Length: 591
Image (tube, rainbow, N blue to C red):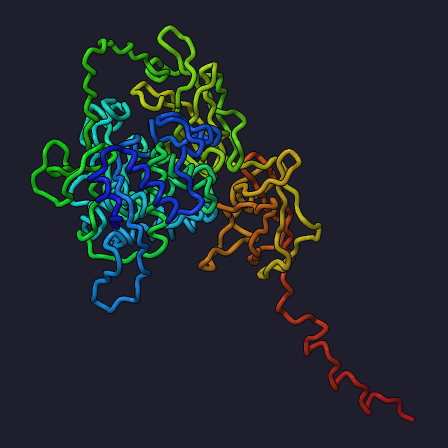
C-alpha cells in the first residue's frame, strides 16, 4: 500500500476508494473516531448542539464558510519524535509530512500557551491548530511567511457566490479578500471576513489583527475553537469545535487524522520548505510547486488546487432513449426570504458594573410582508469600548430563529468599564441592515456608609492619629463592593470646601493632602483610609466621605493643644527656697 493516501487517490475510479482510505486511517491512527456522520446534520445545516450553545457565528459553515480544503491524509507510518537538534543544524526526521515550517510551528505553540492562560479549561493542543492549518492552507503554503509570520502573498479561497459553494455576499467591502461582491476565505487559517471581524486577534503584538499573519490567525483559531466553554480534552467537544470550523464530516475525519499524526511526533523545517498538499475537496489535483504565474486567484498556481480552488463535477451524460427532465425550480432558503430585522421586545439595556443585564436582546426576522421567518441564523455582536460580554465571556453569539422568527441572545454581563456600547444583530449570510441596541453600564453604587468602631479619633497638635478611619458601604442593605469613594477634610458641616488647616493625609511623596480620590471599597464593602496627621492647629475638625450612589458619612476629629515648652512656676529656680529665707542666727530670740 502506498505510504500516502494522496497518491492512492490519483488512481481511484470513484470516491469509494477515498472513503475507504479515510476509514482505514481512522482505524489505524485515530482509535475511537468513527467515520460515520457522528450525529451531524447535512452540510450547511446548523448543528443542534451548536444552536444550544449560541452557535459559531462564522457564517454559513463556520469560520471558513465551508470553503474547500486540502483532503490529503497523513502517511500511515507514524513520525518519529524530534531529537534535540545540533545548534545551527535544521532538524529533518522521519516522513517529510511530519515537518512543520519553523515560524508556523512557533505560532501554533504560542497560541496554545496564550489559551492556556486565558482559557485553561479549554485544553487546546497546538497539534489541533497544526492539523487545521494543514488542511486549510498546507501550513501557509509550506511556510511561505516572513519573519513576522505574514504570508508573502494572500491565501484566498473561492468566491462564495453560491456556485458550488456557500452564498455569502461581501461583508468587508473587499478589505480582507479584495472582493467587493462576495466574501472569500482569507489567510493560512482561512477565515471568512465576517468571522474575522469579531474573531480576529493580535497574536504577534504588532497592534494589528491580520488574517494573513499566522500568529494572528492561529490565536484567532484557538479562541474560535474554545468557544462556548468547550473542553477539547473531551472528544465530543473536540468534534463540535472542528465541525464548527467547517461543517463537514469528511473535514472532521481529515483534521482528526492529522491531529493524531502530529501528536505522535513532528519536527521543525525551515520556512518555505514544508510539504504542500496536492488534493482539494474542490476536486482538483496537480503539482504543488509554486509558480510566478497567477491566474484569477492570487494564491493559485497552474494546476495547483488551493483551499477554495477546484472545479465542479462534470454533468452526467444522459442515457440514450431516456426522457429529458427539467429540474424543479429551486426554492429560496429561509435566509433568502428575510427582508429585515425587527425588535422583538427588547427593553432598556442598563446594568451596574459586574452585574447581569435584566433584559436580553431579542430580534425577529421578517419577510417584506412582515411575516416571521424561522430557521434563520442571527448573529449578535458586542461593539464598542467595553468589557461587557455575553454569558460565557464571549463578545459574539449566533442563534437560530424559532417558529415565531425570534432569536434571543444570551444574557449580557456588565464588566467594570462604565459607559455605553452597542449590541448589533445581523442576519448571517445576508447583507441586510443591522439592528443596533444601545446598552449602558453604570458605576457600582452605595447608599449607606457606616464607621467601623466607635473609638474617639483624637490627636495632639503636630502628632498623628493612632487609629485609622474604617468604613463599611452597603447598597439596599447588601454589601457594596468595588464602589468608588472620595474623602475630604472639610471646613464645616455646612461648608464642604477643603480645609486649609488641621488634620491631613500624606501622598506618596510625603506631601500634605486633604482630599483623597480614587478610593474604592473592597469586595466586602470595606474601606480603610490612610493614616491621618495633625498640624499645630488645635480644635474639632470634620472628615467627609462620599461614594458613587450618594452615600455620605461625616467623621469628627479632635486635635488637642500640645504641651507647653515653657517651665512652670513650680519648677522655676526662683521658686525654690533660698538660703536667705531660712532663719539666721541673728533672727533667733536672744536669751
